[in-house]
Length: 374
Ligand code: AMP
Image (cartoon, rainbow, N blue to C red; front, side, top):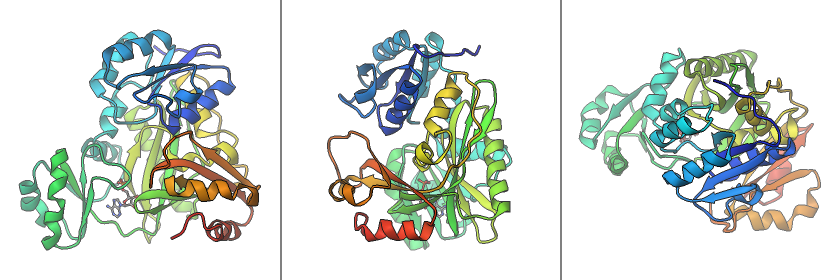
C-alpha cells in the first residue's frame, strides 16, 4: 500500500545527523513537520525538528513513539537494526522497507546484489576468519583491499595489502566479524551516481559528480564529472539496473571507479542522500533532499537539471575556524555548517558549495584560500 503524504503531516527521520538536517530543512519548506529519533540531545536534525525523541536507535519504546507521531518514516543512515526497522514497518508507514538496509549494511550482500543486477564489482573473496583469508588469499591477485563486511566508513575498517608479508596487518579487522578482500582497482577517477525512486517506481538521476578523497574522506565533488559520454551512459545504466533490482524507494548513491578505458566498476552503495550530492542544493533545479522527501511522500519526482557547474568542498573540524575567519573574502561561497558543537579533527562539520563558470579558477581559489592545506 502506498500513501501520499501532504504538508502539515509529519515525517519521522531515524538518525539526527547532517543528512537528516538537510532533509528536514527541505521538507519544512513544503510545510511538513519533522520528528527525529537520535541518541544525542540537540543533534543537527534535532535542532531543526518539531519533535525530538532522544533515545538509542534500538529502543523499542522510542521507535513506537516515533511511529505514533509520524505519518511516514525514513532514515538518514544505513546502520539501523534491520529487525527493528522491519518491526517498525508493521506499526508505521515505512515505504522504504528494511530490505535496502539489509543489503547495503553488509558489503558481501551488497556485492552479490550488484552482480545479480548485472553490474561489475571488483573481484573479491570473503572470509569469516583471518585463517580463512590466509588460505584463500592466493586466489586473489595482489594488491588487494581487505574491508570489514559491516560497519566500516570513510576508510575505517580497511587495510590495503600489497604483499603476502603484509597480510597480518588485516588480522585485527576480523574483530568486527566477516571480511571481504577485493582487488585493488587502478582507477582514473571516482564518481557517484545518485538515483532516487518514488513509491510508484518513478526514477530520477542527479547530475553525476566526480569525487576527490583525502585520507579516505570525501574532500571535493566536482559537477559535472569530467567523464566521456560512454562512461556517463554506462554509469547511469548501472545505477538504474541496481535500483530496479533492489526495487528501492528513496535515495541510492552508487559509488564507482572509472578505469583508464572509460569503463566503470561499482565500489559501494549508500541507501540515503550522499555527501557527493550536496551541491544539488544550489546547483540544480531539485536538491537530493527535496527529491528524497518527494520520493517517500509519494509525490511525482522532478527531472534534475544542473543550473550551473559547481564544486563542493567538505568542511572538517580542522577547517571550521579558518573558514569562518574568511567568510568576508568569499561572497560567492555558499556556507553550510551543521550545528555540531565539537569541531573534532576529521569530523564532518559542514560544506561549501561554489557555482562556477571557470572550474580551474575555482579550484585555484579553493587552494589559495589556505583553508584546506594539503
Ligand atoms: P569505501 O569505504 O569502500 O568507499 O572506500 C573508501 C575509499 O578507499 C574509496 O573511495 C577509494 O578511494 C579507496 N578504495 C576502496 N576500495 C578500493 C579498491 N578496491 N581499489 C582501490 N581503491 C579503493
